[in-house]
Picture: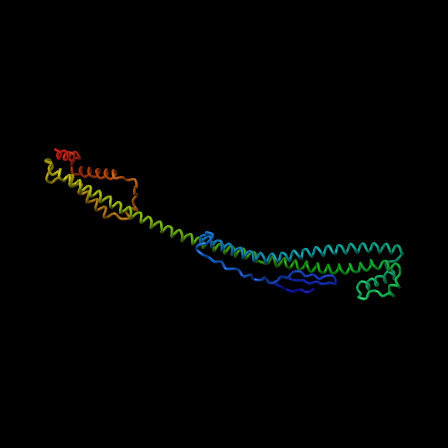
Length: 347
């Protein structure tokens, strides 16, 4: 028996005159050239950059596992082949044993028929002749054949077959023992092997790294999206500021115009005192304040305040009139005085 070591896998070669059996042994795997993957931001399949990265990571992890699985698959195939050979040898031994028992039964019948004692010289000579006929290259000579008794001639076939069966059984048992040992050692090596475990861990590391990269890309996209929204809000806020400035300037112009008209009316009012503020002064003061508010209005003020898109000019005018009333009240004037001034001007 020859034992060689190849990649920690024992290989046994057992040979007899009938057959030669080889068990185990693995060849070197040929490396296949793989085409490189081309990664682009725009894929013909419509994949996003993140989807491409995830797909490539899955493919890489799959290749790692498949390589390890291929190695284990070859080992499993070898072990399965050994199991099948062990079963074949077991059946062969059983068949040879059954044939030997059948031959012994026929020999017993012949011995009874010719009244031959198994320990007699005639039977012992038969065994020698049968051994020579079975294993000698020359076989039996004509003289030896002629000198054989009738019992020996008839029993020679059964004795020769039993001798051959015995030799084949010994060889099969030796071969079976070698295969059992090989299978046991390969099974131990397989249990020690961490190829598949390492491959799974490597695949998990690849996918984990891919997930981390995906999260980073998603975070970057979120930051860019938030920045875009911020700029958009700033632009909208600027537009609102400009619109509010124009509205306040228009209100100021309107109030100044009304103040000028009211000034004409109030100049002719007899009951107005020299040091008394008029409603025209009030409107002029409000107009100045509106202009000041328009000049001071900034984007931050719009962002901090809740701007009602449904506010109308009527609401603005009502607010102005309310403020005029408040100022008139402070000056101990009544809104009826203003109305009276308007009536006086008509008179």
